[in-house]
Length: 300
Image 1 (cartoon, rainbow, N blue to C red):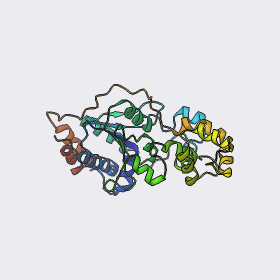
Image 2 (cartoon, rainbow, N blue to C red):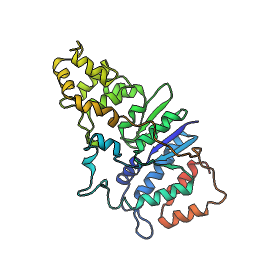
Image 3 (cartoon, rainbow, N blue to C red):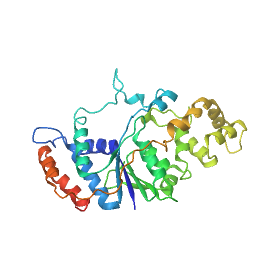
Image 4 (cartoon, rainbow, N blue to C red):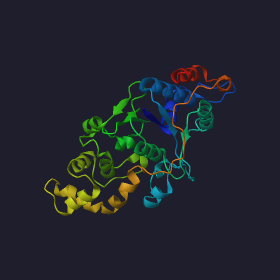
């Protein structure tokens, strides 16, 4: 009973930049992100054959509780003189069309006010039975990997055809840290894409050393203050200097696992008696074989 969680924004951005912008509907509406998203979803369904499926959205891409703790959180992505995330002009009109299409297919779409899609996926992963496959191009979700519960990340950084299936071994091999300590590692290293600086002066090697020898921020701070033998003095000094940031880092960096999820049927959608509405939608927007592939992947 595999549950597949789709990081929808990650998928539609990847689709938008990966598909030619010459793909348009009969009226000239751009549809490259829509077709790419649907094609990727079809491919994933065919490969992993999940029994449950949710398309997850940001209820808020900069949750107030994260911004309150760290005002620069994702500030690097803000539009000038605005509170909205910068977004390509020809992507924006495609999103409501895509969401309408998912609704026609009966694929549940879930976003929660004041939570990011990462938090929605993390809460599902925390509360639902495995196996669970989290589909994203964002390494933040590596912190959710759990071999015991069979939670893995389908990581799309290399594209859909060469994606990685991230488990503890992948994290350990890539970052030279215990597979279950990615969040701790990220707190010290930082993440420029989210505007998170990490601890000043600590890069990937220093963060890995910390994650290999301590299980929590508090343990690392205690070790630094005690001049722990496994911490070089210069690194210990940097940890202590970063104490203020490290007080907020766990809440900002770690995904929330308690988002108030709505009651939704996660079962794979069943074929409707009549596909005419879907076919009309397909023709209206010129979605071609992409819709046919999704119908096939769903086994309709």
